[in-house]
Image 1 (cartoon, rainbow, N blue to C red):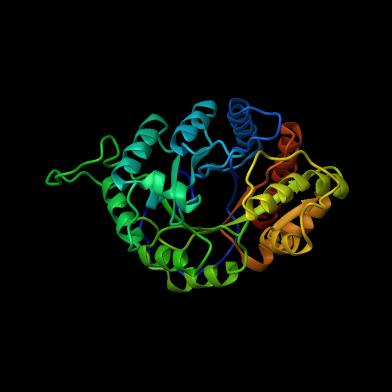
Image 2 (image 1 turned 90 degrees about the horizontal axis):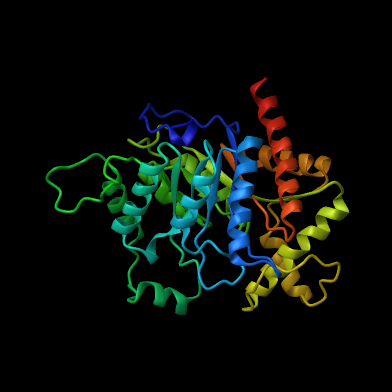
Length: 352
């Protein structure tokens, strides 16, 4: 089932050594202005096919609801769409917002995906609703007062684990599939839970970088080897927008800056066209957006190479998950192609 966090073999605890093993993509399946959701879903499949050829290890999709500019709300369905369009790349959720779903249903969905595409499916779990509270209430029908996330994770792991003939409830065809489960987070909570359970951990530094260093340190220092994972395996999210020149990359990234600013001010919409005029964003909002999106590599190939090297040297992730919403599909393909070239160089240097 691949390497690193995909290898579910318990070994003796070892100190964290560092060294990036893989680079991957997180796709929110953006719906740009002037593009239909059907085209957006086709674009995601096309990007995944290219990513497979460029050496990316995983292609993850994320659960968001009530957002016109994101087409991956039915995340398991879109994962199946992408997996069917590719052959070898791992495809998964980054993530499924577990409080929105019964663990049994998630196990059935991802067990089915693993049965259809064996050895290629990942399941990242988040604790946030992935939407506003009114939509969360529509999803769940009944809002629970307590935090049942740890118990739900354990229940889900049980459904995916070895068959228990005595179990009253079995997830079919999930039983025995051992789909790799990740804990996602943007605070210390997820880091602590992932370490306690002995699961791989992915930090959402591409939009919430403030606690990245502390979370990775907590995860590595308190990790307990488990039946799922022998040693800590940490992934960090990094925004990327690469183009032939710094100026072009900054122009292309204006779409995401504008979309994020509108989301933060309660005006979510389609991914805007790039613009040289961001005057609609107040200075205070712009400062907040740029801080939230500061864990990023933006610019020409040389600029992206330097910025990525600095991030990798500081945080020493086992894997990097790159993400970036660009209005023009061809420009988005080129951005991830440049990023793949940069990441391949880095992994080759480490291996030498």
